[in-house]
Length: 392
Image (cartoon, rainbow, N blue to C red; front, top):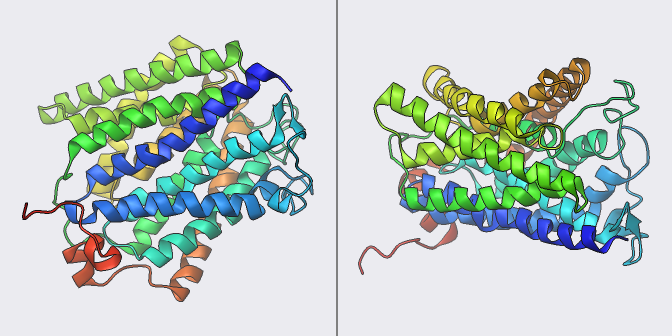
């Protein structure tokens, strides 16, 4: 065990949990109507709790067990055989478990943005749990757990390069979000602006800080590689923020607060897969393109395809993660066959599993709330609470 590595990954674990609670909750919560903000908080919080338990029970074993190249098996369920003295590289394995658990929390939580303001709470919980175990955890095993897409797998010695989750986190969550949005159909009222842009900015800032743990922690060591990952993460986020704002100003005449912070998230998602393989100049390029590319993806999905992916999960996270994964090959840090092949295989698998789970779960519990609940807001109707006391 290395003490410095252990200390850094403990901090990184806290930072990645901070991304979901409260970062993502505030970012998403500020973007919805005031009558739905508590439902968004509830979704993020309850998902964090459920994923933690399921990761302990089965998820970690499926992802990082050694049953075969496609499935980790259940040999490490409930951390069977893992003690305080067990090691994973230079880290206590129990710490590696905890660090990866925070990734298993935020990935299904990202999907929340696609279905806010109209989804049934029971569907959120059942779908998120099943999706994490049957979609996310197997993909983790394939790429990060020594599976068939990793080094020495079907793409030869140089397997799929995904440093911190461009495919594993952002492609899977982005595709799932898009598919659920299609099955749900659009909201009755899509014209309401974000109720609290200040929440959105605060949440985005928390995500930005937490992303240092997300990408820097994925080095699994306190070394120069972790420092470089943090630095390129910051450069990409800053550049994408400005390129988004400039593009928005050129197209619409004004650069908005919600726009610039959405650009931040686009830059962060795009650098995630490449953060361990590129330098500051490459990060500058990735961020500059991401701010424009993801903004155009938002307009395409929302205005032309008429898909109500409410908070633009696929356009920002999905497109960003896919773009960053491809840029690894562009900059020569991975092979084209592995990068494109990995995207295709995981994309097809995610689509099949997500559609199957949507049909299964909605047969058990309603996918969408009734029109009255949607109109009046989920906070009071579903959770019995209001975010704001308008009478005081």
